[in-house]
Length: 271
Figure 1 (tube, rainbow, N blue to C red):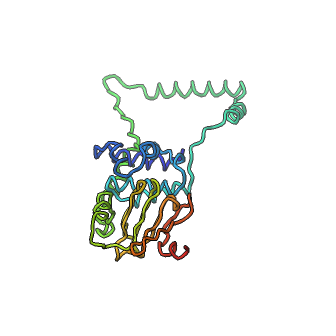
Figure 2 (cartoon, helix red, strand yellow):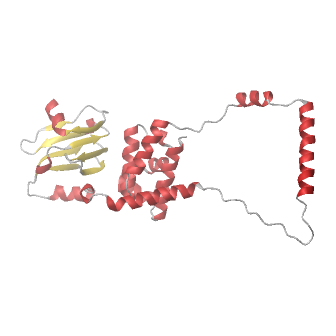
Figure 3 (cartoon, rainbow, N blue to C red):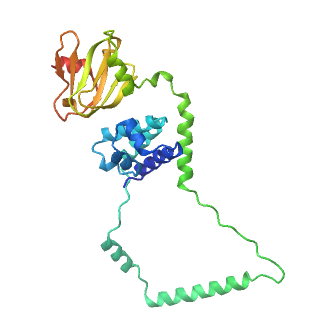
């Protein structure tokens, strides 16, 4: 298990508990399954297929908790590149090492006598005088992992207010429904889902217009002033583009193809 993945999961889990949010509520807000959220919190990123899904789910989780995702995604990239894993030792190797380090009987006897001499010397030298009380020495407190995690969370909290407001332009499902209900023809193109699929759309300034899971037959209207958009999706074959002028429908790609920050106009040109 990757230690950095485990640390990321603990940070998100503690933040969710601190905000008193149930994991079901996070699932409803991000449209990520409860099992995948549990996998993230337990550090089992290998159970989530593909680095693209891992980054997308962690980013959506951070947005649901209203914390900056920069530190978390940086940690995730570090964990992926380092690939630090805790692997169990094989019994055979351990057995060989232990056999090689077994001392001979004379060496054991000499070591035992040496320990006895040292013990007697310390006992006599450190024997307290009558009427005096030995000073009580308390063991030093060990650095706890929870302190490190708390410091990371505090850093994330301090960074959050400095983020530009213009970047927080994510449109949730309620806003999508409002766009669909408008009858003022403020859009030229519309993206529709053939089945449940994750999608993220940005404008040329990297402002997120939508980052969610579109359900089957659900649509997202692209505003007229945002036609040159960048799209990412988990399955290009599950989406198609509808042109308002001629009702022409264009599939964004083959089934199972993952799009990662691809310009929509280039997809239309290819067709």
